Amino acid sequence: MKTKLILFYGPGSGSGKSTLSRHIHDVLQQRGVKTKYVAESDVLHLDAFAPYVEEVKKNNPGDVEVLLLSCERFIDACNQSDQVFRSSMH
Image 1 (cartoon, rainbow, N blue to C red):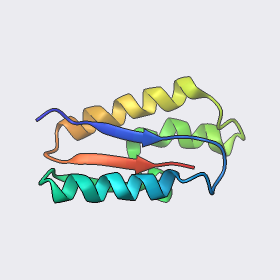
Image 2 (cartoon, rainbow, N blue to C red):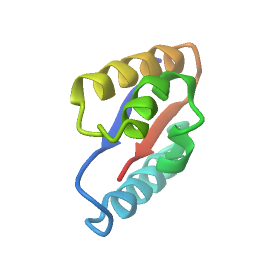
Image 3 (cartoon, helix red, strand yellow):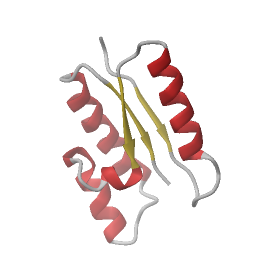
């Protein structure tokens, strides 16, 4: 099965990204889809997102191209797995 990545990215906390992510995760699991929840804090420890984490450390979190490249690297890693990964990033 090809990996699907559902990523919610937006301004600040409190807009419902995590709540929506958990709901989608629950619905997918109820339907028998293998899923893995990846919280924002988990991204700091994923090799694929290292370039984006470096941009955040440089106080440049708005670099969407770096984020998209990191997502592509993450999807490539996921494609070698048998799970659906879902991330909620604030």
